[in-house]
Amino acid sequence: MAEEIDLTELVRRHQASVWRYLRFLGCPEALADDLTQETFLKLLEHPPEQRSRSQTSAWLRTVARNHYLMALRRNSKLESVGNIDELDAAWESAEGDDEGERYRLALRECLKTLAGRARRAIDLQYSSAASRADIARSLGMDPEGAKTLLRRAREHLRQCIEKRLRP
Image 1 (cartoon, rainbow, N blue to C red):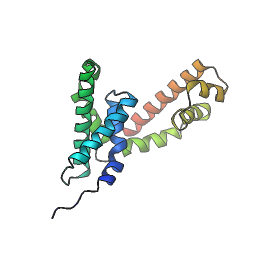
Image 2 (cartoon, rainbow, N blue to C red):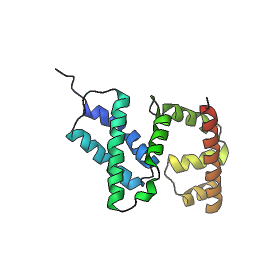
Image 3 (cartoon, helix red, strand yellow):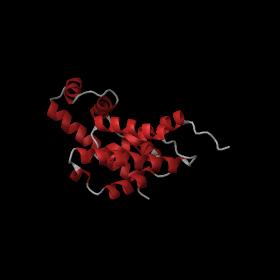
Image 4 (cartoon, rainbow, N blue to C red):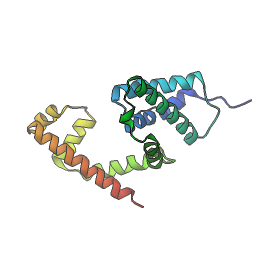
């Protein structure tokens, strides 16, 4: 008898990755929430056979991508996707066998290089979901200054991560 698949564990293990993948493709946040749920509903309706973690991840990405393309077609916005095959290849390259853990580790290390207000602004925006106006008030800046500070901090993080991940 085949080993039974733990669907709850599959959802727990892959949900965030499917959502990030949809956002990577350009899917708006609210739609990504809905499509992630639809993807896992498909999983519950048609559980895949026992597969490796990377095979399951690829299957879920395919289902999510198809749901996204159908949503775009319904809304006649197919031109916003660009070359989805190139995006998919870039995602697989970055995600790798570790489901993006290499990138998350690089981000954690690069966050340590941010100091002062830049680090506080990033924490407020991403950990506390603070608005730019709230960040500006908290740091004693005007909203445009906060916008510039955040842009520079994200650029610093992007360059740091790319440097750490170069072969």
